[in-house]
Amino acid sequence: MKIIIVGLGQTGTLLAQRISRENHDVVAIDNNKEIVENVTNLYSVSGICGSGASREILLQAGADSADVIIAVSPVDEINLMACMMAKRCGTRYAVARIHRPELADDQSYFSEALQIDCIVNPKRDAAMEMNRQIGMPGKVKADAYFSDVATIIRINMDQHVIPGGSMPLKEVRQFFGTDMLVATVTRGDKLYIPKGDFVIQPGDVVGIIAADTVIPQIIMKLGLMRGPAKRVMLVGGGTVAYYLARKLLEEKKSVTILEHDKKRCAELAELLPEAEISYADGIDAEVLLEEGMKKADVCVSLTGNDDSNLVISLFAWSCGVESVITKVNATAYEKLLNKVNIDITISPSVITADRVMSFVRNVTVYNARGNDIQSLYQLAGGLAEAIEFIAYDSCSRLGVLFKQPELKLKKDILIAMIIREGQVIIPDGSSCIQPGDRVVVISKKGHGLNTLNDIFSK
Image: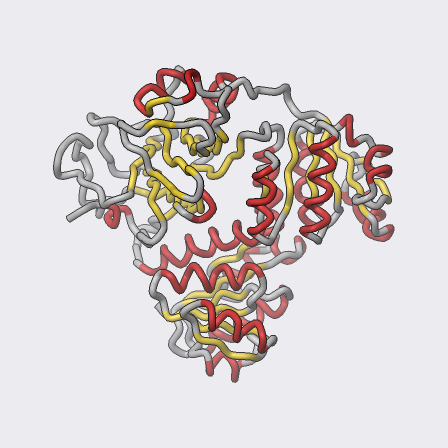
């Protein structure tokens, strides 16, 4: 497919990298010549310097014959204009990133009146993901969510967690005493999609998929369960903080927001009357202590600066805050935080890239019944993907038992879960895929799966 990307910030650059790997024809547009040159030198993409809202620039990029335009510039209005203009030039599909709540909340208008096929709101999506992480212990992070009934959690397997120092994979389910499956294991820089003879060792980072109802049992077995989070401190009062605080207040949690801009404090006090809004510098240790950092169950660092968020999270960790969540854009910081067990990091750029990649994969193979891919997540620092497919009648292996030779999967692919009418099934040899099932597939990067049929070996 021919794909145009407008805006080469963190998200646009990440998309240029990921989409170009899947052998699409990519043209990137940005008004910064140096950034365009850097991206075109790093990845297999073409580049044009100029405004993505310009009809002339879009035509130079091939908007008259493009399949998809993805507008992720920093300005919402430019993204909307770029999509509208590209559509008029002849581009088939349009994706726009919208930050501001007053615009993002009106998706039906953009879809119907402006013919924008997909709106992504990274700030709202980041807030919802942070809310799911609230109360998670530092050694556990929820990495992916499927149909609101199942989750992949990532666990650092320390020496004291594994009895005897190691654990064969076939004993893991018995150890936890519940239905679950080890989907990925990361050992150093190497990723494994483990089979029955695999042995988990101390220091491994394990991705476990299970029904949401049994996740607490798994965490309790690891000795990491904590009481419910009641007091949440948000450092930074931007749009993400607004979305997150609104959700937390709906759940009857106590919310304190620290914001250094007096005008924004007044806005938040009006928008969130039940929250405690403090005009304060969030990177001042004395201020954080005065505002009750040591009494907080959760600290979420949400300033607009990755360095500040890192410092705030390290300080919260040193104060003994049980759950520390850090908003980052630069992926390098995720690895640094992992080294000190502050591993619950949320990147709006990565969230947006996952949403857009799901859309791109779906339109690559048109299906009149609807989208094959319901959700897509990167795992293990981008070494693997988790994809939730719908099994339509076109699936070539419907009704075939997993133990039968006809159901042979490509290398480094695993069917991790089947969700049938809201019920979670961890598959075994007697399982089969039925029409309407939601099938969760784990694969190493590079497969570029678009439909469920792509996982089967011919």
